Amino acid sequence: MTTLKEQLQADLTQGIRDKNTSVTATLRMVLSAITNEEVSGKVARELSDQDVITVLTREAKKRKEAATAFDDAQRPELAAKEREELAIISNYLPAALSAEEVNAIIAAAVAEVTAAGQSGPSAMGAVMKLVTPQVAGRADGGEIASAVKAALTQ
Image (cartoon, rainbow, N blue to C red; front, side, top):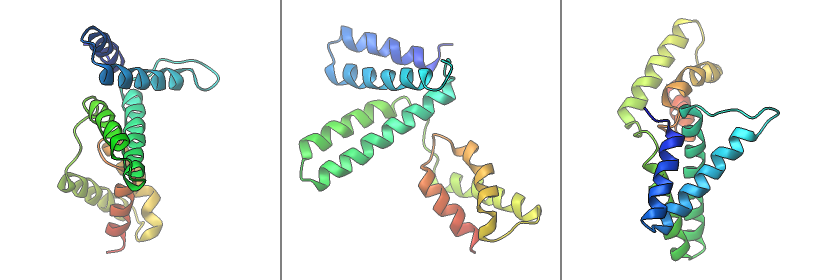
């Protein structure tokens, strides 16, 4: 089985062969971000697929925010370009969790933390510690945090 990084490199090669400039440019940008992540810090390291997904999620979030900013600035052509890049990056991300799946994960984590003796808003950190690994790369962190906060204040 190939790693996600190898798949990205193979798709870049195919994009170059097909002369697909948007795929080529986007994948080069993503691979550059992955390489930067690999060499950041004191020691260079090989990223796992989960680390690559983290980088892809970060890049997707940048595209989403840029598209919104361009829409607000009345620049629809630039917003469309950002959304096209977002669509290309999204092909490599795991499927997003549905609201029901997220709520079930949060409910289970809240029940576990409550059983351990913590409750109310002060248990937010403990619940997030349980929920975050389960939803990493498949749900927006801000939405998860607000859903956890809502679940703890009920």
